[in-house]
Length: 136
Length: 59
Image (cartoon, rainbow over all chains, first blue to last red; front, side):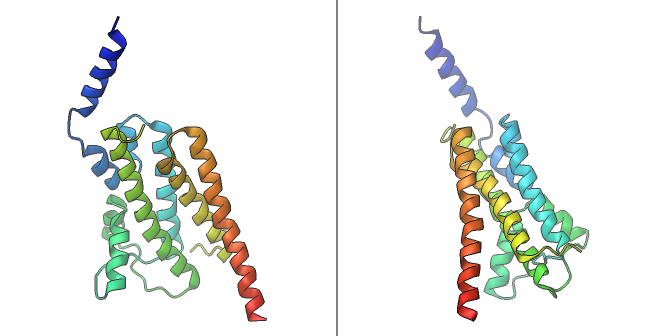
């Protein structure tokens, strides 16, 4: 008697151990990594595919990666782009997304990249909520 | 360079955003699928409705 509650308490205690922000940071740096750390393989894979595909399609459409903050709109775009984590830094290092926007589709691509970053932040916060037990 | 039509871009955008919304905003797999589908229908449906509104305004 009483073994089930003890097991649940032990599991909850072990879940609270360790660095609680690791899934949040990992999820920001690599899309889906936060969920993978928590062994949510299906959710992590779907999030990773969606966010990476959105970012890659944005670049394929000649979307622009924001590089500076000359005005408030550029600053907001840069904040959105930074949500992509390592993908943003690697792409910037490789010189991708540096061309000025000349076509309508390139403007769509720029928005795809910014929204991919914002969705990645939502996914990373979701991983953090799973880690802290706020969500199951 | 990839150049999808405006509607194809909306569908791709809605698809990826709906997947993330479904997974992050609901708790159980069944509710995730239902909410993801709901978001996708809203994305695509609102694009179609707004397109017709703009077409009728422009006439």
